[in-house]
Each structure stands twice: as structure tokens, then as C-alpha cells.
Length: 247
Ligand SMILES: [Zn+2]
Image (cartoon, rainbow, N blue to C red; front, top):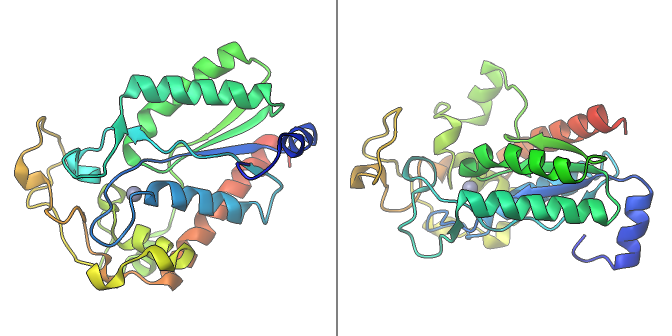
């Protein structure tokens, strides 16, 4: 959408196309991936889904909720630029209302940055209060329900949990598939927090934060795995759009 003219946007909206907006972050992704990773990946998924269902890819929201040590490395890395939950809710609400005013009444909010998830539903609910003829599909996490066998194939060496999938196997693989020119393969390191309990502590103890900013083991990432992840996420997005918007 950001490369279209206003007349093209008017016509796309008038044709009933859904607008898919990705909510990402500007956040450290280890020594090998760019800060824009959490925006590039969901936009790539939406562009791939657009090959299956007609849709408009709206400009992503590039700032996300505060990074947590155990899922994003935390706020101490240079280049991690976060906003408060309140700001995120207000920003997304305003953009959704603006999309409705632009003519789109089928809207899809697709999250990528783990920490955003809890704020997005509220923004959608507030937007619909002001734009009651909008219908919003909210995709808080991008994956279909993988079977145990699929997880074993997708995560050589074992599935570590989605929360540590930060700059790790899945994100690195998808970036190798989408933007190999932006992946510094010679700088890939495997890392993990010294301690990763099932609760959180504020402020984060230093042993929650891996020095590299990598939360697991990206050395086994491949472009081929990346394409499998992309296919799964794009297929699920297309399926949700078809189901909810009768496309
Ligand atoms: Zn990420």
C-alpha cells in the first residue's frame, strides 16, 4: 500500500479487498539479523498470502511494546526502540480508523513481535467502537497447530518453545528465504539465557539476557526451512481471510 497512489487505494478499497496491517518492532535480533526483522517477516507473509487471496498490505507499525528479556532480549540493546503499551493501543486504533476512513471495511491485524500480543485486541475493540461497520480479523500468533511430527521436522534438535524463537531457528530461516542479503551468516551464534524460568522478574536479572541477543540456536537455520515456515503462515493467513471475509 505504501507504494500505491491514493486513487489506487480508493479503487482497492472499493473492490472490497481486505487491508492487512502487520504489527512488528524495531528490536535487536542478534549479531546476524537487522532491527527490522519483526516487520520484514510479517510483511513477507502477507505478500505471499496475497498470491492466494486478493488483499492490500498496509504499511506495518514499526515500533512495538517493550522488549522482555526472556522473549526479546530486553530493552538494553542499542537499536531496540519500543513504545509504551498505551501508545501502541492508541497508534493501532488510529491507523485502523484511518484505514476504515480510506474505504476498507475488512481489516486484518497480524502480529509478529511477541510482546505486542496482549495490546492488540484492545486497539481493535476501541477502533470498532468508532467505526462500527468495520470487521477486524486479529491474528495474534501466526502459526497453524503444528503436529508433533511437523515440529520435529521444523526444529532440528528439538522444539524450544515459541518464546525463545527470537533471532533463532525460525526467524533466521525465514529471513534467509525472504532477504538473504540482510542476513550476516558469518556472525551467527547459538546462545541462550543462563536461566529461563516460567515466570518473569522486573528488573530482569542479568542471567535472563544472553549477551548476543540471540535466545536460541540459529546455526541450524536454512532458507528451505524458512520457506516451509512461510508457506505455513501464509496459508493460515489466507485461510483466515477467506473464512472471515468470504473471499
Ligand atoms: Zn523477532
